[in-house]
Image (tube, rainbow, N blue to C red; front, side, top):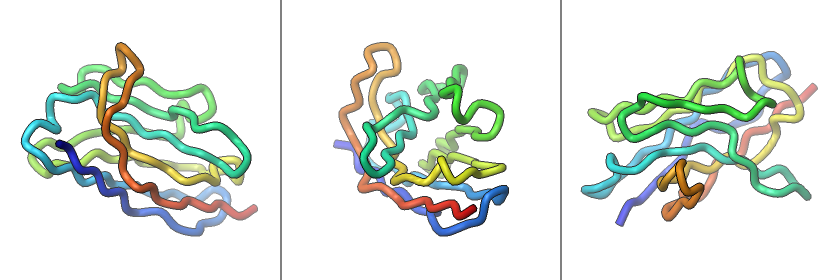
Length: 119
């Protein structure tokens, strides 16, 4: 079992930055690829960033490319999402997930953290 707990969300203004953290626990969390998803009100959940198990590969959705950076620190059992130049359209609940970027199947999810960007 893998447990994921997100933190770092909040209310910011457009152009501000935030760093989300995802604390992972469970003996095998490090074998998984990790991802950040988000879901805005009335919209489907979308993947915004993924990172492979050994941090050798990252990927980003077009909407966040160049503004968001995903990273993982195995020593701290934490995955991060650094977000800069935030826009109102980034407003959503952000979720951390563990699984496989190859299959697109994520078995473990956190509870989510709210990010609200005011204009």
